[in-house]
Length: 460
Ligand code: PLP
Image 1 (tube, rainbow, N blue to C red):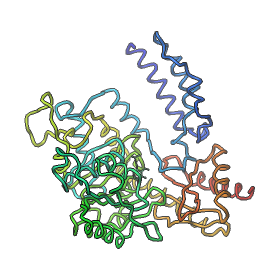
Image 2: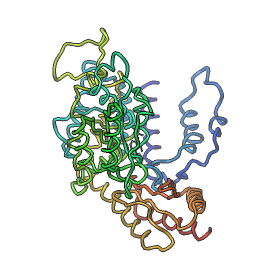
Image 3: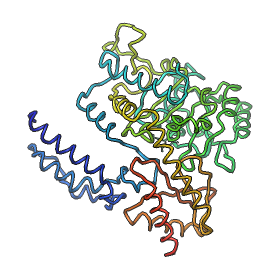
Image 4: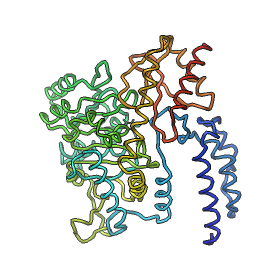
């Protein structure tokens, strides 16, 4: 492609993106396609000879975009949002253009140093200890797997050479994200040694139950090594009591990991810091700028107080990557499984500079306020009931009827193409769930969702 052609198609693509972001609601929020429909619309084999860019872009527009579930749509309220933003997209574009690999400092100093700078700013904005170490993984799932691996390393340093010794035990609440259990599977601790700690009536881990489980495991000769507390659980956004969990972790020498994948962004607004009390006593914490900090997928920020443990778990330097030692030349490949490292910090740094802490905090506040208004409306409506507290921007509620009726409401709302909501099971009852977290979502969209839910209930 010549520079002139690149310029032409580049402008065309940016125009497409600008129009799309201005009106994502031109598309139904949920892709109205059947499984296999896109596959069947595309040739079974790739082209022998190159095709014109016009044809590729036209097929993107005609076939691919309509088969997308639109996370940018203001009516997307099903899962925790992926909040993209224009500055984030530009950062991502430049990162693709540079196409560097930050496996060691020398292979791209800017990747390593910007990652350290952006994460230091983030620690400052969130009130996390400044002397912690940070690095970016693709997802919170991978970050948490590394936390479990570090816990294993701290408890059983021989495991790296010998393999995991039997008897290590990991704890998280029954409401924790499945990625914690997957982490235990991945590092060889095993599902049989993963404990789901019971929760209280507000879906928070019960510290008394944790203490009892740890005591029982110790009495049985097992080796408790890690507990994961969640601030902002996936189903209800409940907040585990981190200070009490930290007490137990300290008493028994457990690695304390905090999964704040969704809610962690709220630390930017001081009035939400109550939810993160005790997090400064954690050994590690993960938060996802790609969930609620306007940074496009993928960007998960992992912080640890004990980077040396992560390093001793994973550092394995092939001869061709050995570099002269300089304490400021950090080699991020030493802190985990991935060698290759995309320039993810660039988009985060663009976003942080463009919006500033205050701009980002104000957006989060607006989302929480929209959810609080909806929660009050649910409470005021005798046909509906809330099924969990609403500390942040997710409202869990149900029609006071059968599970089947609630599922029918959800299906009817989602079939409009205007709004996409999800459901979950709480206390054995099907519950509806509205998650607000998209830059484009305004009060009018949340109110429209509530109107559609009413219409669906009327139609039952
Ligand atoms: N932790 C929590 C609390 C989540 O809600 C999620 C996903 O929604 C994850 C972890 C996994 O995030 P990721 O998709 O970045 O792996």
